[in-house]
Amino acid sequence: MTDHESGSRPPVGRSTWLRWATAAVVLALAAGAYARWGDQLSLQALAQQETRLRELQQQHPVGAALAAFLIYVGVTGLGIPGALVLTLGCGWYFGWTVGTVLVSFASTLGATLAFLISRYLFRAAVSSRFAGRLQSFRDSWDRDGAYFLFTLRLIPVAPFFVINLVMGATNISVATFWWVSQLGMLPATIVYVWIGASVPRLQTLADEGFRAALSPRQWAGLTLGLAMLGILPWATRRLIQFQQRSP
Image (cartoon, rainbow, N blue to C red; front, side, top):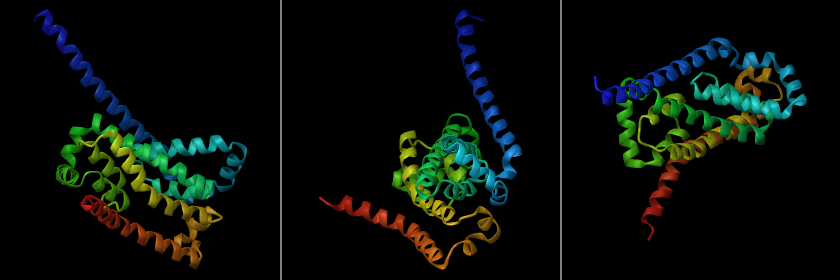
């Protein structure tokens, strides 16, 4: 073996092993986090800690917000089930305004983290596992551009984590993925944080569900909000088409 050959191969090997080692760490973190805290990401589990959570917020408001932000990023970034529960919980815990800001940025950061993990660690596996869906995503992205991802965020026809993984295997830029996700997920974030902020106690929401926990007026507002979410992609597309036709 020549000096040139011996000098050129190790970097490739180290890069491959580093990628595999990083992927193994990510998988271990996800599995470990779910095994340790997965059963706590439910409304019933959070409701059992209701008094303690309120005390922590009163004693350490900034620390509580930072902890909630990091937990949300970790859950969404590693694909651990429980994002909806955390969204409702943040609404109840921080109120509508602070909860919306926190969840909006945490969910986008978590989605982008999952996107980057897919792109740089699991691209081959994602391409193989979601081959049919990936081709459909690529075709739709080539045809509609950012509007396609915007529609997926408004009305997710695929699970949140699957969207992040599959988009990581397309040629969309990180910056575009970020801002479209931030904008597209905001309406649903506003609605679900509002539900959480509308109930005085998590136990009520856990025991009685959405319908029993909300007043008839609040339920009517929720129904209207969800209906508007369904109309928004169509209205946005019409607006884009109108602007494109304008001289």
